[in-house]
Image 1 (tube, rainbow, N blue to C red):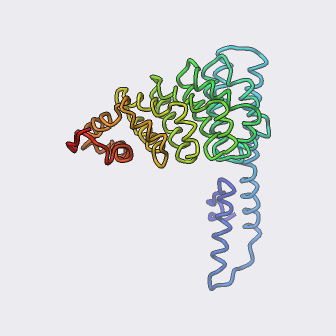
Image 2 (image 1 turned 90 degrees about the vertical axis):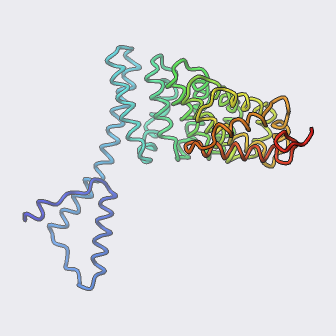
Image 3 (image 1 turned 45 degrees about the vertical axis):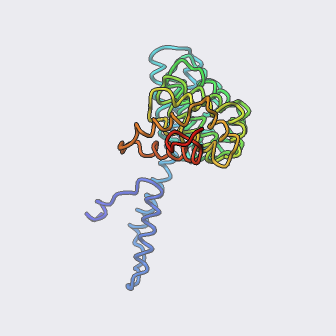
Length: 327
């Protein structure tokens, strides 16, 4: 074999093989006629394709091995070594399932049922949060997997973990999985509403867990933006008053999302506007003070914009001390 052929490297995956085919096709478009493919090159291409396909098969085998570890641990009882091994298995699966084909294969292999039935309720918090993380990895942007998880009752379990698990990491990872099941997923949203998911988000914003507060506020804002028809539900449950009370807590970056959610609740929606204008809330003065604090802080520009936008929506043209008009 020539030195040239010895230095050739196989593509690492099917995409690389396809790229090779594209390059070969581009070369064929040149003015010079292509010579017949040599036997050596045919062999090389066949081996490259086999290697790429083998890679996918190898990943399925890795997933099967990881599931065997998780199933064995449940059968044989608890010990520290087994827990470490199972945590490692979850980490490998989460990495593999960033590939959408692998996520679908894990569903077919029964891995998601195992997560929901055995590991979301596991006594070890490290296994609970890794199970929630794996569910999120598989569900993200995968309607087929989302529907499968919803059908087996994953959402209420994840909401319960978000709401009340004693471990802060479990709560954050569970909310991440909830988000992956309800954003841009109508069936997921309806299930979320039926299990009073908005109340879970509200309580999440009132915890001491900064990550949970931020993710709860962000998901609320996202759902309101995507589903403005839910404004009535939120206003009727007192969400305006609750969000304003959150704004009165020591300032935090997640307040940007809270202000954004309030803007959504008042825009083109008189009941939300009426709640915000209630003098008992003192929102106008709160917004005035907050805008003053944020002036000149480059990192807080979006929060300031939401603050000013909310002031305009709620109080523009209203009598105030600023314009010297009597009430």
